[in-house]
Length: 349
Ligand SMILES: C[S@@+](CC[C@H](N)C(=O)[O-])C[C@H]1O[C@@H](n2cnc3c(N)ncnc32)[C@H](O)[C@@H]1O
Image (cartoon, rainbow, N blue to C red; front, side, top):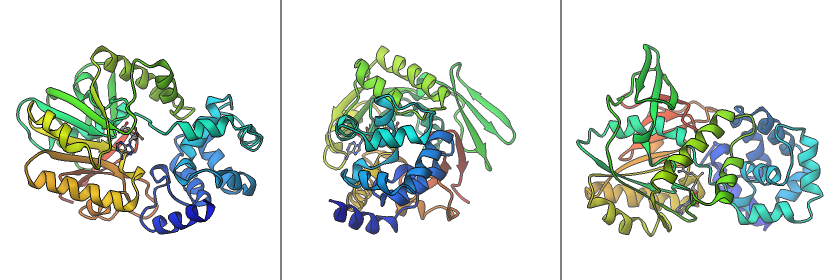
């Protein structure tokens, strides 16, 4: 298994440089990059930097399947079993090295399904750029619990260089807009239908599943925890239609259902990184075909190296800049913060 992990890692390291959203890299490299990418969380950043230098912990990680070695998952599992975060690295280290199988079992049985409603602040300008009239159908692939399917139920505050642009009421999703003004909507979208597809759809009525989602929020980020609770309450009031399935094989059936309700926008964020490189290419081709057939529009939001054919349509991303790239129908329109906190509109630049 270790050999397999190294082989996978070396073939993928050339494709991506975004540890926060690249679950297949060599662990030492993945943790070292995560230490930079996770600077929003001093605790996780410090833990990741320490793991990257810790041969014993790296050896422990190497006994896990490659997809399960991700910092986000390992740290979340340790917290789930009582490791304090924020807290000292030594507590994490001993919990992993002395684990009686409890943490390992959580790592193996759960996954990083982080569902970040804040991403809607960066997705909505991309949807707006499509210029669709009237109510739309929103279909999210890799929806987790579907918490990003409610852009019409939040307010927004885009902090542009010319001042704050507000839409809707409280609570607001805030987003710093850098550079050119993106197409910001002047009214909330009308959503005729909302639904999603996920390998493991989250059930907003399941307390344990929602507690795990909360546990995935980085330690110091109380604001994100607060937002998550509100997003769960919104979805509980009107649960989305979530279907268990694989985005490579099960999208067309759900698309047919959505198409009866209005122009369909298929979107995804922080999902395609979980596919092998060949699957990423197949998904890109699938979506390109659906868009060309007029079956839907496509809004993508992934780490910069995940869908390189989209990233390449925009300006070159500076080396070492850990950004997501948002695409519309296969073309890069924005560089975005992975949790939706900021946005740089790059379409046409
Ligand atoms: C990090 S979460 C992102 C959730 C949501 N898109 C968001 O932005 O908050 C990734 C989700 O993708 C799902 N996923 C991964 N591979 C998938 C596949 N092949 N088909 C469908 N869903 C998949 C996972 O189960 C997980 O719920």
